[in-house]
Length: 201
Image (cartoon, rainbow, N blue to C red; front, side, top):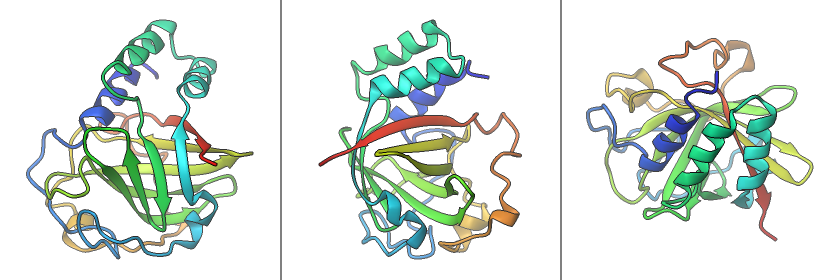
């Protein structure tokens, strides 16, 4: 289940530069292009603000879920290049990703509430100021006391230009009744991977 941990971390680091044709500034319902202004998103209200990625808490959680020490050591080795996950600033329906060579973002859409978390999708842009390829992630956000836990499922390939959610801007809100995030096959979708963040005071 966790054998792709190193791959997931690597994909997050290299961003969208994978097997895809170029997909540019079509996107979420209010997506205004790279570096666009955020819009209000009621389901993301509990997560607004600045968040610092906590490596130690994250790898401790991974280990508790069965990730091998070898895989954790390999993931730690990547931090000599850049963090396993950037710090984030959530503003409305956008999470700005900081601490990497380019300023990236998650542009959230298809959001809906489950009993313990907010679920949805996000366009992941390696550089929010530079048109180019993008990935479509499955995402979940939840609060654990003061912490923010972000879970992602990452596809093997970047967004397909023929994807209906690329061709037609998808809605910001969706329904839990139609959620298929857990049922999508692995591969091509990765297992859920959790990243833990502390609030920046």
